[in-house]
Image (cartoon, rainbow, N blue to C red; front, top):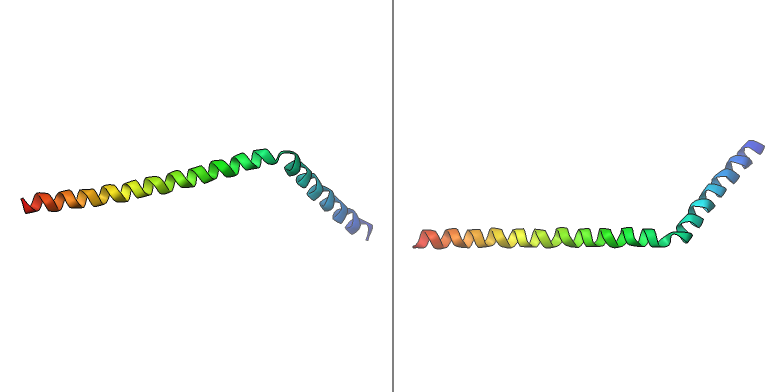
Length: 67
């Protein structure tokens, strides 16, 4: 039973250490989250430009066929 209690205490101390680290270094995680948001925005923006470019290519092909 002492071993089980020691294991639970060890896990509790590990969780406390992780939470203390996050609390004192929260700005790092904020920067990571901000960078990820910009990354997702950049991907979405490039996807929109790619779709627009495909539409323009289709329009150019149709115009070239008509003339």
